[in-house]
Image (cartoon, rainbow, N blue to C red; front, side, top):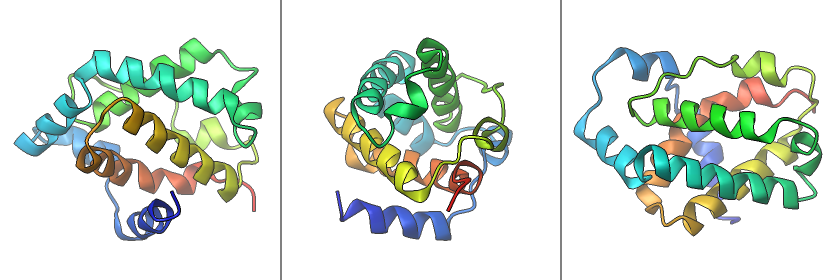
Length: 149
């Protein structure tokens, strides 16, 4: 895991991919293959089931997810990830800045969430290259999610 965190930091600094930019253009073959590598929408549902269990079991993240409507969070994440992966979904949920503004999330908790997502993707058999493509799309969101120092 320590090897993946510097990679994520580089991605955060290097990438400026936005959801609007990916939604505005037709998906490329690589994007379509990435969506398929995740098992399409049923695979994303399985991923979020696994991910939520990990989030609740980890002391670094549990407090942020214990008292929320977990089924709703999983549905929103499925839609968001599906859209980011050029699947046939459209994320219409609240923007990341608004959702996270009052949560006082530090870099420590954000990194823990990324680590747990990587573990869940590996456990679900998502190929490493597909994992990296998703992480590259998610990386710019750190600015809106980390709200405490």
